[in-house]
Image (cartoon, rainbow, N blue to C red; front, side, top):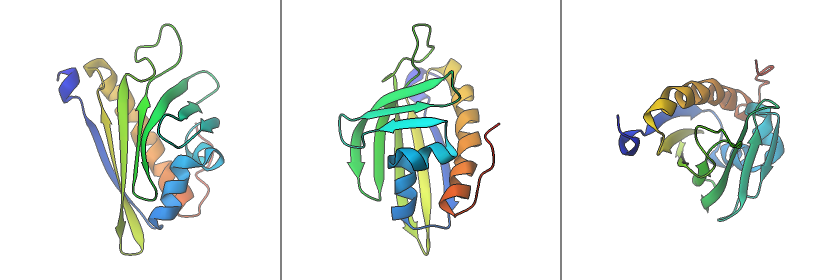
Length: 144
């Protein structure tokens, strides 16, 4: 798999309106309920995307595109001089599609080096079910 072909893709269904789901990607308090300990978000093109995942690992990027309730695009990487994926090195696209009374979330993570693909796949596979829980009004429990 080349870096150009390393697109990680996930689709999930959430029993909540796109407006609700969108807020869990753009409101720092809501985002931290399903992913990370703290978030600093400025959801506008050029704005900061920064999430302290566990007190040690910090994901950082910049918002590229925001279309209320339907699309969020931001760059992604990890802070630290020894980071295997520097901030801005990859791009995350989130598309929200209304589906009856719910939402289909389509996530695409572009530009991952082959050696980072599995690590990020495990991360999204851990965090996306937590998003389902909070967006549907449940407590996802502690993030272990």
